[in-house]
Length: 327
Image (cartoon, rainbow, N blue to C red; front, side):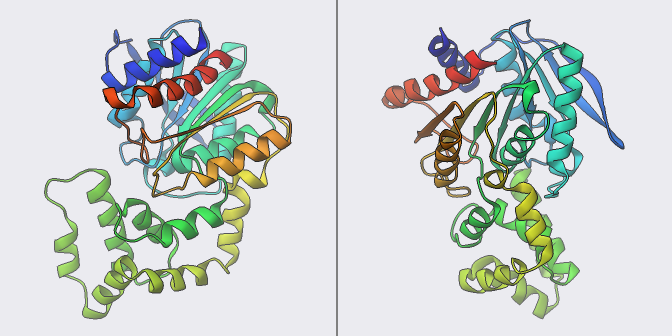
């Protein structure tokens, strides 16, 4: 049964074929803030909280709608809260605490345990929160392309060249100490990419930079060795150590009473699959029920399934099925 549901989820999310569930909006109050939340009341099979990634549209990203509808069509009630700092591309050491508060609120509202689903950097935040004081309120966690350790993940990202540099621009904008016009150009580059602008705004922004600032921007964007050298200066700061301590799931690992499913793209060039592999081993060593699924069907947050990929789709469906069965 779990495999069948996993296959159904993969098919629905890939083909976008489902009977739409009415989406409503609710508010989740947490300390000092109220989170606007999309709710898909698909049924009483269980409750899943979906935490969006670092996408500028947040819960209004079309991928979130597909995910919410696909899970709701299987009979789940889905809560998708909007985390303003994540949608604004801000990497914050406080985000996991907000996730923890959301878990408590939704769990108390539905009167039972809840599951968590997330991807990329947000998935790491979810794992940190899940291993915390609310762990007994959680039935299952599914991550797609998560990080395990901030230092190894960001070293890998800073060392890449010739790839989609959305993640690189986001990290540089968040942390590198550079003149404000250069930092603003990082942000614009990320926005052009994330919003898939037909008319990118970066060229006009670069045309207005002083010569020294333009040279610095281009060196940080295109010169791997220079970028790594500047990045390693930042890793020696207290700010980075706080980031590492608060946002690395590997540093928060403990025995937890819920199922963990770690799915990762085989060719993910933003967060390498070794991050999920390492987490899987660590969870097993602590006696946690963990399932690892490394697949060639997805890259970093995107996937497609054709006829030639059916055997791999079966494996992917099996992994998702284990999560669905545990919700």
